Length: 189
Image (cartoon, rainbow, N blue to C red; front, side, top):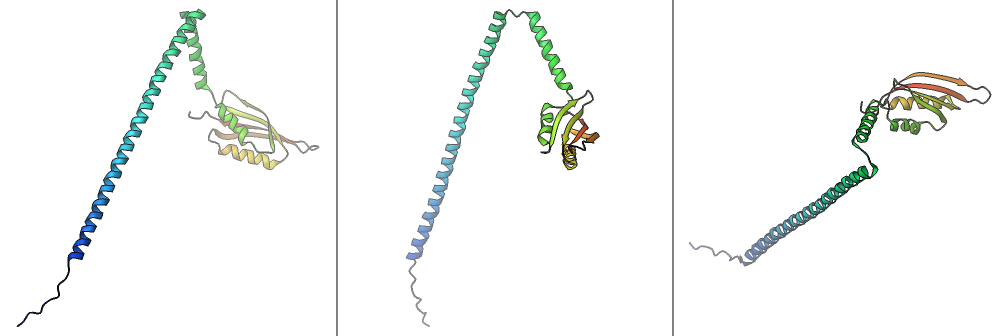
């Protein structure tokens, strides 16, 4: 029997294509490695630059603190402030800090009450007593405005509750003057 001659396949094209694919793969790998190295170098340079800036700012801060200390010493010497006067000053600072801790409501919270006030309400006066109660004297032309103000106050974290509302209506002008008492607390206490 005679074996049939199989046609010859030219493998050169396939080998060339395989070589091209390997080259492309190597190029991709080289590009990825180069990009990675560049990113690492850029990151390291950025870190180094930031670190240098931080050190420069720390040195400047240290120098400024030294200057402040020197100025304080010069002021104490020039002003004739003695040890007794410094003790009295420290005592006053401690007393002020104690009063700050005992404060019933934060000033920003009082400002917040004015800011949440309804458009048609005019706040005439606000007081705080020793128990932390906030008394608001105000007037408006609408009961709905008063209700809206009460609802807004009840939503605030520093208002524990509305304790008392007294309202009087002026039949001639239609104006409603009211007094509102709310329990307040200092933020963070």
